[in-house]
Length: 337
Image (cartoon, rainbow, N blue to C red; front, side, top):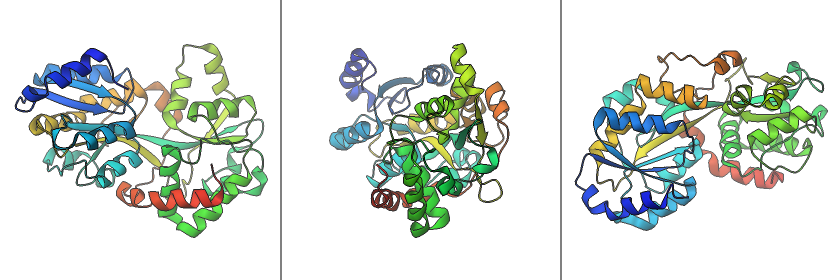
């Protein structure tokens, strides 16, 4: 989806000039959060680099970059979910980036040679307090327990959030065990997988389901909602940070890399380094209830503080990404649609 027709025309008409102008950055973004506007505006204010932005779904933007080839005006591809970053990397979209700033601020397990994470969100377990207790669902593995038959609600099996989560399970437990676990999830389904994370939260709150998994920022968003009915539904829910006695809770991310055909590479690297700054990191937390990727950054977010501290899985996201094909195949074999 193009942000605006005028912005698209300006980008296309100005592509030639932008090739040699380090005061322009062409950003292809699969992030669709209004709060990011302040992020981009402040980068321009600090650096004088104007951002031309095209927004769309990650797969559409990647296809566009590939079709544009060497003539692509894209300097940065910014997206959500490690799976999208992995696909971009596999397609050869990114160029390697060497930056002491990025290497010192972004933890090793949250980056590769070609892309960097700038915010994180946790895949938490959400349950209906009238149907279950926290001790019923302490781990991701426990979601396949037959005692939960008819209680589990889920987004579609092929959704990127689901694929990356299952890939992390393969990384932790191996493909065979994960396939058996996925079959258990299918057996426990309350209904056909559908909708997004917010839909799962609301279904658990209504009692249609007993338990689901969701990215943390969706729950935080409901907690801070201006709608009384949305704040009230949260009161019916309990949360579990899974696998706290083991590897920790699965983390997904938002991240970016420099496109290999970038005409404004210097500006692109400056933008990535800006995203790792304390100021930008706080934008991610305060604007969209995500945690900073830079561990030293302190934030003040009432909803995130209410959710509490937890142990996060620190498996390399590159390792998780390598398991994405296996995750898709085993989900298909398990009948997880």
